[in-house]
Image (tube, rainbow, N blue to C red):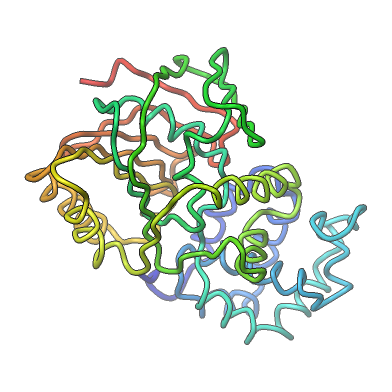
Length: 336
């Protein structure tokens, strides 16, 4: 699950197109891309996507007190950050001084789902399934935030859905208004290479570090969602989805239906591995109804994440979504 080496300046700059709402990260992308020394650090990172874990590892070290100077540019660490245009010398010195720690962290940690507001896209997609009661399997689950989708309160366009909850997920509906209905979730199973323990301080700090410095609202929502998800009965399965998904689906009771979902997880697999996931799901359909829900940035040329659903091997695009759930654009007429 590694990006072909070396990681190019072009790849980094394409990733940088999606640093919406983070002037600091947009600037650091260009700073890194222009520096052969900094590029040599990020090119030693195997975990995908390398920019995510590169910047997260740096912020993680800063959160642990590694540098007072560089920390002054991070809104996540100081009340009034210094102008990002002045960060160059401090950032370069910090990365080159701590490059061994950054590379170690980035190659032992993963980019993991930590934005519960992505459920504003996942929830309406799940509602297009033909099931009223179903199990849910989440690929790349991290701390299981998406598995608690029915425990959050939603305000999407004109639609309000969900129980009273400390987690309120608000989003703009650019296309069709979401269609909601009562559903009952059976078991909830999360698959991840590195399952996150929501009570472990380092695990929580890593999820925090994956959030961009300026996104204080996201950071507060993460902490609240961790508390809500922590109260939901969830089974976590550690390992590669290619190794464990078949067993997870086979072990579900009887012939009961299941929704298999993923968000910003399949991007860490190559095309052949993604086809293998689809094949595993298709094989499981011989024994039970399976519905797929996918929210991904597979193609870096895309401006927004694609929301796809399907009960057959071929998926259909239900719409697009902001990567952090600020809006969704649904088109129900594509459904069969």
